[in-house]
Length: 237
Image (cartoon, rainbow, N blue to C red; front, side):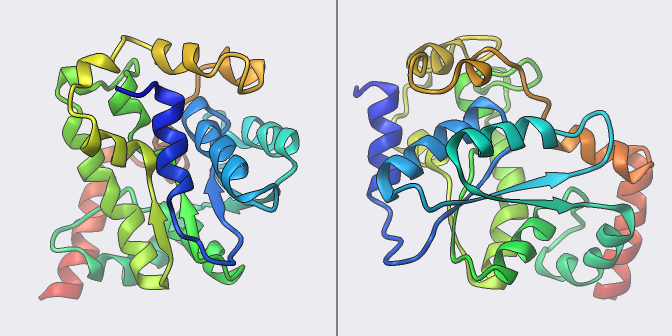
């Protein structure tokens, strides 16, 4: 099997973005920074980065800005608030056959569309593939990516944006997950990118964006699910 960096580099470089400027959604963590590194390596330094901001202590704004500054990207912060989410649910939920509540990526994709971006790269799949404290492939989290993916794909389809997730593609191409997985905090991925990514990324732990999202909504997950079910039912009855 090729080494990790070669696999990801090959996957990114074979994407045809024509003469467009690519974008990467970043959190400041290792997964999205790996993807950003390879996008710049493959397509040049003219890259947009986007970060969802939730305005609380789970926010990753500062870490993402540090990465954007390091790579010199055109960086845009997308403010996600409860009123914006509730408004967005009224049209986004019609894209799904059952209620979904963690749809904050729709607001990021709206911003991409407003900036005429047509190719987006994301780091989804890194947690499941390389191990994370609250999720891993070997502990039954393989299905998490399939659950999260439609939140991104539905919005991109709506706005005509091509979505690329190299970690997701690697899972398809390289079945022996054991060869990748080393719990609990992506040691294999960190080791592979030492000396390639900045040290401040290699050495830090990131909080999944969903943690900031739930806190921003000011509701328990159950309360949010009930509210979204009400909206979805009004649209589909």
